[in-house]
Length: 259
Image (cartoon, rainbow, N blue to C red; front, side, top):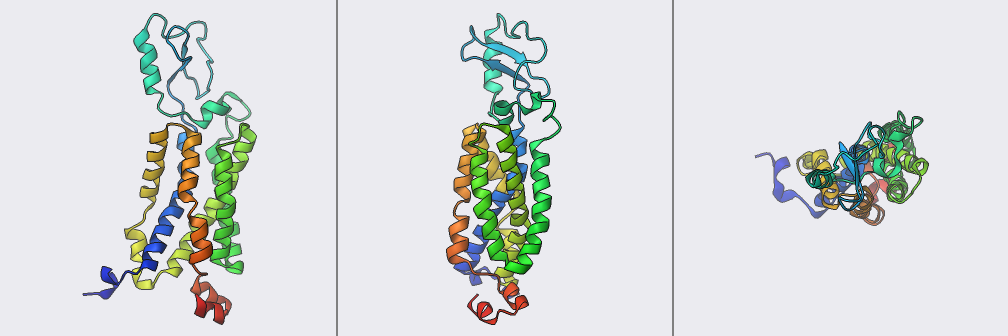
Protein backbone atom coordinates (compact mmCIF):
# COMPACT_ATOMS: atom_id res chain seq x y z
CA UNK A 1 0.00 0.00 0.00
CA UNK A 2 1.28 3.45 -0.89
CA UNK A 3 1.88 5.28 2.36
CA UNK A 4 1.32 8.61 0.57
CA UNK A 5 -2.43 7.96 0.77
CA UNK A 6 -2.42 6.67 4.35
CA UNK A 7 -4.78 8.92 6.31
CA UNK A 8 -3.20 7.80 9.57
CA UNK A 9 -0.20 10.00 8.76
CA UNK A 10 -2.28 13.19 8.61
CA UNK A 11 -1.16 15.72 11.22
CA UNK A 12 -2.92 18.66 12.83
CA UNK A 13 -0.86 20.97 10.63
CA UNK A 14 -2.19 19.21 7.52
CA UNK A 15 -5.75 19.68 8.75
CA UNK A 16 -5.08 23.34 9.53
CA UNK A 17 -3.64 23.96 6.06
CA UNK A 18 -6.60 22.27 4.36
CA UNK A 19 -9.08 24.21 6.53
CA UNK A 20 -7.21 27.43 5.83
CA UNK A 21 -7.42 26.83 2.09
CA UNK A 22 -11.14 26.08 2.28
CA UNK A 23 -11.86 29.30 4.15
CA UNK A 24 -9.63 31.19 1.71
CA UNK A 25 -11.74 29.74 -1.10
CA UNK A 26 -14.79 31.16 0.68
CA UNK A 27 -13.19 34.59 0.33
CA UNK A 28 -12.14 33.93 -3.27
CA UNK A 29 -15.65 32.82 -4.22
CA UNK A 30 -16.65 36.49 -3.91
CA UNK A 31 -15.97 36.43 -7.65
CA UNK A 32 -19.40 34.81 -7.97
CA UNK A 33 -21.17 37.09 -5.50
CA UNK A 34 -22.33 39.44 -8.33
CA UNK A 35 -24.85 36.72 -9.20
CA UNK A 36 -26.65 37.73 -6.01
CA UNK A 37 -25.67 41.41 -6.08
CA UNK A 38 -27.30 41.86 -9.51
CA UNK A 39 -30.42 39.83 -8.75
CA UNK A 40 -33.82 41.37 -9.36
CA UNK A 41 -37.17 39.57 -9.34
CA UNK A 42 -39.46 39.57 -12.36
CA UNK A 43 -42.09 41.52 -10.44
CA UNK A 44 -41.96 43.81 -7.45
CA UNK A 45 -44.36 45.48 -5.02
CA UNK A 46 -43.67 48.79 -3.28
CA UNK A 47 -45.52 48.78 0.02
CA UNK A 48 -46.18 46.45 2.92
CA UNK A 49 -49.94 45.95 2.60
CA UNK A 50 -52.08 45.00 -0.37
CA UNK A 51 -54.28 48.10 -0.29
CA UNK A 52 -51.32 50.51 -0.29
CA UNK A 53 -48.90 48.58 -2.49
CA UNK A 54 -47.97 49.43 -6.05
CA UNK A 55 -46.90 46.33 -7.98
CA UNK A 56 -45.20 46.33 -11.37
CA UNK A 57 -43.15 44.26 -13.81
CA UNK A 58 -39.40 44.76 -13.43
CA UNK A 59 -37.76 45.92 -16.67
CA UNK A 60 -34.03 45.49 -17.27
CA UNK A 61 -33.38 44.84 -13.57
CA UNK A 62 -34.23 48.46 -12.76
CA UNK A 63 -35.38 48.91 -9.15
CA UNK A 64 -38.28 51.20 -10.06
CA UNK A 65 -41.19 51.09 -12.46
CA UNK A 66 -40.23 51.93 -16.05
CA UNK A 67 -43.22 50.91 -18.19
CA UNK A 68 -46.91 50.55 -17.45
CA UNK A 69 -46.71 52.61 -14.28
CA UNK A 70 -50.21 54.05 -14.47
CA UNK A 71 -51.79 51.24 -12.47
CA UNK A 72 -50.65 48.41 -10.22
CA UNK A 73 -50.65 44.99 -11.87
CA UNK A 74 -52.31 43.58 -8.75
CA UNK A 75 -55.40 45.81 -8.68
CA UNK A 76 -58.26 43.83 -7.18
CA UNK A 77 -56.07 40.75 -6.77
CA UNK A 78 -54.89 40.07 -3.23
CA UNK A 79 -53.29 36.77 -4.26
CA UNK A 80 -51.14 38.53 -6.86
CA UNK A 81 -49.66 40.80 -4.18
CA UNK A 82 -48.84 37.95 -1.82
CA UNK A 83 -47.34 35.82 -4.60
CA UNK A 84 -45.00 38.63 -5.65
CA UNK A 85 -43.94 39.21 -2.05
CA UNK A 86 -43.38 35.48 -1.59
CA UNK A 87 -41.19 35.26 -4.70
CA UNK A 88 -39.07 38.23 -3.62
CA UNK A 89 -36.50 35.96 -2.00
CA UNK A 90 -33.38 38.15 -1.93
CA UNK A 91 -32.76 41.86 -1.43
CA UNK A 92 -29.83 42.73 -3.67
CA UNK A 93 -27.43 45.61 -4.26
CA UNK A 94 -29.19 46.27 -7.57
CA UNK A 95 -32.38 46.91 -5.61
CA UNK A 96 -30.57 49.32 -3.28
CA UNK A 97 -28.50 51.30 -5.78
CA UNK A 98 -30.60 51.05 -8.94
CA UNK A 99 -27.52 51.04 -11.17
CA UNK A 100 -29.44 49.27 -13.93
CA UNK A 101 -31.75 52.30 -14.17
CA UNK A 102 -28.78 54.57 -14.93
CA UNK A 103 -27.79 54.52 -18.60
CA UNK A 104 -24.22 55.48 -17.65
CA UNK A 105 -23.86 52.50 -15.31
CA UNK A 106 -25.90 49.92 -17.18
CA UNK A 107 -22.88 48.57 -19.04
CA UNK A 108 -20.43 49.04 -16.16
CA UNK A 109 -21.44 45.99 -14.21
CA UNK A 110 -20.11 45.07 -10.80
CA UNK A 111 -18.88 41.70 -12.08
CA UNK A 112 -16.91 43.45 -14.84
CA UNK A 113 -15.31 45.81 -12.33
CA UNK A 114 -14.47 42.92 -10.03
CA UNK A 115 -12.96 40.75 -12.76
CA UNK A 116 -10.85 43.69 -13.92
CA UNK A 117 -9.51 43.87 -10.38
CA UNK A 118 -8.91 40.12 -10.50
CA UNK A 119 -6.84 40.44 -13.67
CA UNK A 120 -4.66 43.19 -12.24
CA UNK A 121 -4.44 41.53 -8.84
CA UNK A 122 -3.30 38.24 -10.33
CA UNK A 123 -0.44 39.84 -12.25
CA UNK A 124 0.66 42.16 -9.44
CA UNK A 125 0.47 39.55 -6.67
CA UNK A 126 2.57 37.02 -8.60
CA UNK A 127 5.33 39.57 -9.13
CA UNK A 128 5.22 40.72 -5.51
CA UNK A 129 5.10 37.16 -4.14
CA UNK A 130 8.29 36.24 -5.94
CA UNK A 131 10.06 39.20 -4.35
CA UNK A 132 8.53 39.53 -0.89
CA UNK A 133 7.23 36.03 -0.19
CA UNK A 134 3.93 34.18 -0.49
CA UNK A 135 2.85 34.64 3.11
CA UNK A 136 3.52 38.37 3.26
CA UNK A 137 1.67 39.13 0.03
CA UNK A 138 -1.27 36.89 0.95
CA UNK A 139 -1.52 38.47 4.41
CA UNK A 140 -1.48 41.95 2.87
CA UNK A 141 -4.22 40.94 0.44
CA UNK A 142 -6.41 39.62 3.25
CA UNK A 143 -5.82 42.69 5.43
CA UNK A 144 -6.97 44.82 2.49
CA UNK A 145 -9.63 42.54 1.04
CA UNK A 146 -11.66 41.67 4.13
CA UNK A 147 -12.20 45.30 5.21
CA UNK A 148 -13.08 46.12 1.59
CA UNK A 149 -15.62 43.29 1.62
CA UNK A 150 -17.13 44.61 4.85
CA UNK A 151 -17.36 48.22 3.67
CA UNK A 152 -18.79 47.16 0.31
CA UNK A 153 -21.87 46.08 2.22
CA UNK A 154 -22.09 49.23 4.34
CA UNK A 155 -21.73 52.12 1.89
CA UNK A 156 -24.78 53.87 0.46
CA UNK A 157 -23.25 55.25 -2.74
CA UNK A 158 -22.83 53.08 -5.81
CA UNK A 159 -19.45 54.66 -6.62
CA UNK A 160 -17.95 53.51 -3.32
CA UNK A 161 -19.61 50.15 -3.80
CA UNK A 162 -17.89 49.68 -7.16
CA UNK A 163 -14.56 50.81 -5.74
CA UNK A 164 -14.67 48.29 -2.90
CA UNK A 165 -15.74 45.49 -5.24
CA UNK A 166 -12.75 46.37 -7.45
CA UNK A 167 -10.44 46.08 -4.42
CA UNK A 168 -12.04 42.74 -3.57
CA UNK A 169 -11.21 41.57 -7.10
CA UNK A 170 -7.59 42.65 -6.65
CA UNK A 171 -7.32 40.67 -3.43
CA UNK A 172 -9.10 37.66 -4.92
CA UNK A 173 -6.36 37.59 -7.54
CA UNK A 174 -3.79 37.20 -4.78
CA UNK A 175 -5.97 34.70 -2.94
CA UNK A 176 -6.37 32.44 -5.95
CA UNK A 177 -2.83 32.48 -7.33
CA UNK A 178 -0.57 33.23 -4.37
CA UNK A 179 -2.88 31.44 -1.93
CA UNK A 180 -2.85 28.21 -3.90
CA UNK A 181 0.91 28.40 -4.43
CA UNK A 182 1.43 29.03 -0.70
CA UNK A 183 -0.64 26.13 0.66
CA UNK A 184 0.61 23.81 -2.08
CA UNK A 185 4.21 24.50 -1.07
CA UNK A 186 3.47 24.45 2.65
CA UNK A 187 1.86 21.02 2.85
CA UNK A 188 3.98 17.87 2.47
CA UNK A 189 4.30 16.68 -1.13
CA UNK A 190 2.73 13.30 -0.36
CA UNK A 191 -0.33 14.98 1.14
CA UNK A 192 -1.11 17.57 -1.51
CA UNK A 193 -3.97 15.43 -2.73
CA UNK A 194 -5.75 16.38 0.51
CA UNK A 195 -6.09 19.93 -0.79
CA UNK A 196 -8.15 18.59 -3.69
CA UNK A 197 -9.95 15.91 -1.72
CA UNK A 198 -11.05 17.77 1.41
CA UNK A 199 -11.47 21.33 0.13
CA UNK A 200 -13.12 22.61 -3.01
CA UNK A 201 -14.47 25.63 -4.85
CA UNK A 202 -18.00 24.13 -5.10
CA UNK A 203 -18.14 23.77 -1.31
CA UNK A 204 -17.19 27.43 -0.90
CA UNK A 205 -19.87 28.43 -3.39
CA UNK A 206 -22.40 26.26 -1.58
CA UNK A 207 -21.60 27.98 1.73
CA UNK A 208 -21.97 31.43 0.14
CA UNK A 209 -25.27 30.45 -1.46
CA UNK A 210 -26.55 29.04 1.83
CA UNK A 211 -25.67 32.26 3.67
CA UNK A 212 -27.47 34.35 1.05
CA UNK A 213 -30.49 32.04 1.19
CA UNK A 214 -30.74 32.09 4.98
CA UNK A 215 -30.48 35.86 5.42
CA UNK A 216 -32.12 37.00 2.18
CA UNK A 217 -30.29 40.34 2.23
CA UNK A 218 -27.00 41.13 0.54
CA UNK A 219 -25.73 43.41 3.31
CA UNK A 220 -26.33 40.90 6.10
CA UNK A 221 -24.92 38.10 3.95
CA UNK A 222 -21.78 40.17 3.29
CA UNK A 223 -21.24 40.80 7.00
CA UNK A 224 -21.67 37.10 7.73
CA UNK A 225 -19.15 36.08 5.07
CA UNK A 226 -16.63 38.57 6.48
CA UNK A 227 -17.00 37.01 9.93
CA UNK A 228 -16.53 33.51 8.50
CA UNK A 229 -13.34 34.59 6.72
CA UNK A 230 -11.83 36.64 9.56
CA UNK A 231 -9.89 33.69 11.12
CA UNK A 232 -7.66 33.68 8.03
CA UNK A 233 -5.70 36.70 9.24
CA UNK A 234 -4.71 35.52 12.76
CA UNK A 235 -3.98 31.98 11.53
CA UNK A 236 -1.73 33.28 8.78
CA UNK A 237 -0.04 35.86 11.02
CA UNK A 238 0.46 33.83 14.20
CA UNK A 239 0.51 30.18 13.13
CA UNK A 240 1.49 29.44 9.54
CA UNK A 241 5.10 30.11 8.45
CA UNK A 242 6.47 31.41 5.19
CA UNK A 243 6.78 28.87 2.38
CA UNK A 244 10.02 26.93 2.81
CA UNK A 245 10.14 26.53 -0.98
CA UNK A 246 10.28 30.30 -1.44
CA UNK A 247 12.85 30.54 1.36
CA UNK A 248 15.06 28.04 -0.43
CA UNK A 249 14.70 29.80 -3.77
CA UNK A 250 15.68 33.12 -2.20
CA UNK A 251 18.62 31.61 -0.34
CA UNK A 252 17.29 32.31 3.17
CA UNK A 253 18.82 29.32 4.93
CA UNK A 254 17.83 30.30 8.47
CA UNK A 255 14.29 31.10 7.39
CA UNK A 256 14.13 27.83 5.46
CA UNK A 257 15.17 25.86 8.56
CA UNK A 258 12.68 27.68 10.80
CA UNK A 259 9.88 27.21 8.29
